Image (cartoon, rainbow, N blue to C red; front, side, top):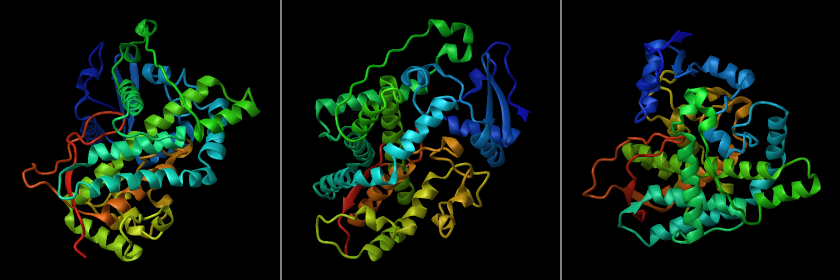
Length: 395
């Protein structure tokens, strides 16, 4: 382990952190000091790990999440799964999520929600053929409505008050989780910080499942746990799926040869469909090259991969999960691996399969070149919206 940049006596490395480009800052530290670097923000020690071997050891057996103010408040003092320390409560919560909320049978039951929301987006794009479409907004609407359907059994039009209210709550929660709080870095101020977080619920699906568990075993889950787990679902399930769709489409627009190859792969395997007929979840298993494209778009850490700056989906063909585990951890790893990973990946693949099958894509003639600038945050969204022109395929 190496000590990072020169630390100040009181603030440590706090002022050196590049909040505008955190990933680039951390990558620079990794190149400069190696796979394990010690930093200090105020009185808080921080260990930055970019070594696959060390990350695997931590995530499999040494994982302990320190309490961070906003995360603790939003998770009702860590009674959720994402921010709970590793203890019997966390193990029981994980078991409940794996066996009940995100079991293969339960994920299968969510299929009508996912397919309906993708169909809705494709229908909107058909109405905007040859006109600029904001894929960033559409991807976020798709992801949030899918989660609302899965959690509440209800979806919303984009201009409905309830959807705007829920979307605002999710965005505020995401912002709070990565905001700066003095008490996180200077523990003496911890008692001075207060955050309040309202939440509401409706009915059906995941809420119904948790209420059923509450009725059957009243002591097995508390109301705070239910609210905290819903927070995990909304925050983790909305912007991550949207960001993955947008970054994959961005990567393909920057490599049009791979875009065409992916479209040809999908169209050849699926065959000709009548207008309005969607690619379904059952057909995704027949699209290995699309899966490879998505995995390549999710990949980070240039120090691990051959030709890391090149977009090469072929590196993920004919490999097992164990071949890339801990080389990339978009859904976490080890015992903290996201239990909703399969549901998220299905949503990403289903959306991309239909977008690439149903339309050809181009940038608006007067638009600036497509960039890859990212916003800082819990999930790194594209800084500038992805605006593209959808057209019908020629053949």
